[in-house]
Image (cartoon, rainbow, N blue to C red; front, side, top):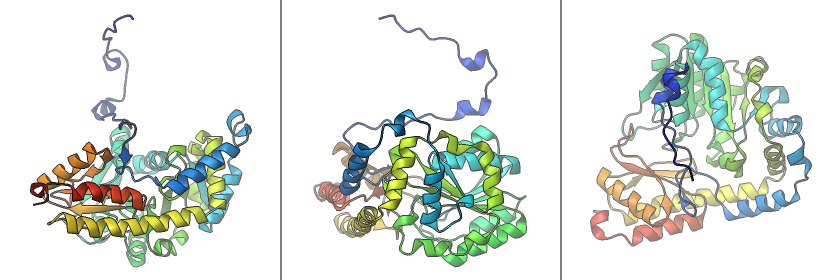
Amino acid sequence: MTARTPGRSLRDWFPTAAAAWDLEHRGRNHVAGQLNLKSCELLHPAVARWHADQLGRLAPATVVEYPLTGPARDAVAAHFGQDPARVLLSPGSDHAIRLVCEALAAPAGRLVVARPHFDSWSQCAVRLGFRLDGVDMPHRSPAAVAPLTERLLSGPPAVLVLTQPDSITGQLLGREQLAEAAAAARRHGSVVVVDTCYLAYADDGEATLQGLETWDNVLRINSFSKSHGLAGARIGAVLAQESVIDYLARWAPDSMLAHVSLALLERALAEPEVFRTARAEVRTARAELAHRTERLLPGWSARATQANFVAFDAEPDDAARVHQALLADGIRTRLLNGEPGFSGGLRVATPSLDAVRRVTGVLAGLPTPARS
């Protein structure tokens, strides 16, 4: 085998996007066989069985033919009670975020978002060169939109991002808060993007969005990764008024969708019961993890959550010890030490009761020093 020799760096001899070199490319490289409770996927056994059965039934056309997106778009529109002209499919929420950033945030020059937030927003700001106006959320703060709208109004028109519920804490904004943000942004000439990746796990979550579809400055990004076990299929949607969808469609995100992904989404939306049942168990598992962890780990406190995970506050050293203990047992979680709003903490997904009981089994076996 020929030894590999380092070549020239591309940026030394060809024009490149200078800011992109500052980004870290991590990829998804966790160890095979680990229980991934960091990415908050719907790793529920009944959902896995359903997808295995559906994959076995797919026709060869879903692989050998280019897809038509209309049927899946219509299914998504019916799922959300919207006109199909108000729906644009995309290959996952990551791509939908890039679309919004390229089409709206970059021309505006500014995006307002809470810290901490989903990494894709800050990565897009670096790549596209717009200002990311981050607002640090105070330690253990209740869900509040006022700090974000105040920051929005302090500068020129921008894109305001609201995650419903929050992707780090799981906190849910109220209907009135969302409506106030939409109204303030419209008066300001700004756009509001509501990311509802985790909303399917919230109690009456859709009710918090009621009325937002009437605002011409509000967009919704929705992934089906968390709600329907389609993380590997990479499919999501943008919902907005027709004029906004007409503009965003010029980036043609739906042209990058796989036929298999579209077929699985159509079938999942047509057979909702398996997913409703799984999500109900996720809520039960969420409550069990919060209760058991607070009993097993003195000083740990679970934040109120309406997502498919629990975020805990803990002393930084103790959070790191528990994070490592779980990793040693093959369980990945998200360490929150140093994140805005956290001195120390851990976020753990709750995809099933079995998964949660594996976690609490590890916690129960920790030596007393790790729990002090």
